[in-house]
Image 1 (cartoon, one colour):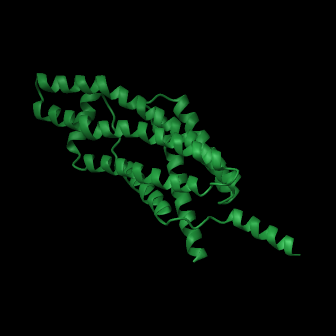
Image 2 (cartoon, rainbow, N blue to C red):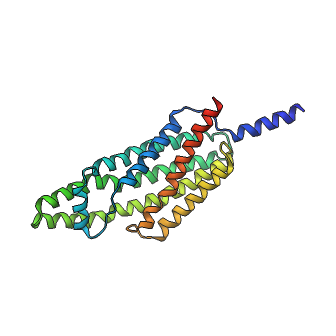
Image 3 (cartoon, helix red, strand yellow):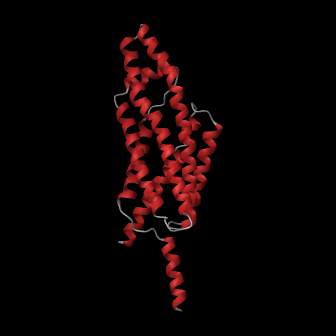
Amino acid sequence: MGSRVGTEAARDEMKTPRSGPLVYPLSLLTGTALVIVAAALHPDLTGDGAAQLAMVARMDAWRAIHWAFLFGFVLSLVGLAGLAGMHAGTPGEGAARAGVTVGVLAYGAWSIVVAYMAGSGYALARSYVAAEPGLAATGAVFLYDMTHPFALAAQRLGAFALGASTSLLGWSVAQGRRLPRAWGWAGAAAGLVAMALAAGFGEATKADQAAFVLPVLWQAACALRLLAGRTRAA
């Protein structure tokens, strides 16, 4: 009887999130919220380089949106580190550690395109508007057309890496059972979809940008689940 009770208690423990520091789920929730809000406010850049620069220059909140992205990336990584640490000593420990490592690459690559648009992209846009029409405006468009593809290539790498990171973290959740296994399989599937989108579509397409959606939403859901678990435990 006693051994059966002990076995059931151990099984319940595996299904219940450990009550680690509150800073991790809060950081993950805040970080993903910043990313989601920034993505919702970000305009759809269409047309040639001149049209895109004109659109950037007209948007007063351009830099604020991109700084929200960048700060959100940092907070998300803090939260993911906590999610991985929660699986220490479980069968999902190795996958969690690999997931966070690849996540650093993902957010680092994603930061390149965001920082470029917040800095160089914005400066070129202001220069283009101030100089139009004229040789300086033509030079601004030329520089943008030559350098923006590099930032977009980094964005595509970030999308693929974030998909791989999400799959690894989802696998760790499914194996470690600190959260429901279905939660982990959902993360693994979301990551595979993101990887497929990033690999199958060019970096200038909407499908490549959509590769970020499911991983970020899964992270936000994990943060809410962890916070809800702490509330029930309290």
